[in-house]
Length: 257
Image (cartoon, rainbow, N blue to C red; front, side):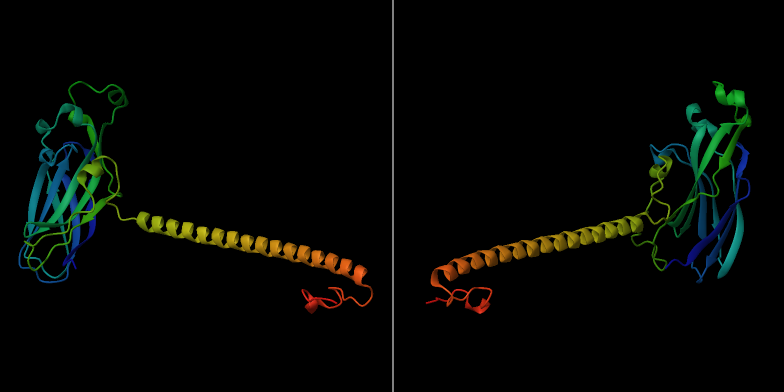
């Protein structure tokens, strides 16, 4: 069980100039006294090729952390554009908020960031040299991607559980890190298919049994008709003392003298 839970992240300036600082108001709950501080980081991701290209905008130590609900504002400068290729300054990037305890990350929250010119003409024909003072960033604050990591709070140096989402997948536009009911829906679909197969199988079995019964009834009728014909022939040859199948059904197969 996690001793710290992020309750809310309020991005104070989701729409701002590309060069403006980031401002995150973070609310979290601590349910037990911690031995060490919490560390929060803001990381700018402009490429999915390698994490070595990520820029750590700032880090902040919070502590000592009292039990209960706590709130603070985390502010970080914009990324260093000299470390980003010109062709990657615009379009979509990612901003990550991470929280760690004793150098072990237990929560990571990612947001998509769209960087674009506000001027229509510049959007249609971007200048060769980006004019960042005219570029606006828009953070999709209502669509965070949350990844939880299980750590040992008594001894965080022990092995931690791997994340359920990669930043590369997020940059590629995948949403596997978002908590949803896809797996549950798949299981339900499989169950429904199995139920449908069972119903179809039962219907096929019922149809087969009905056909078998019909075939047996036809065979019985044919056999009865055949025995009736045989008895009629015997009745004609032996005279009135002979018994027919219809007069004495239990006498089938008996020898008549």
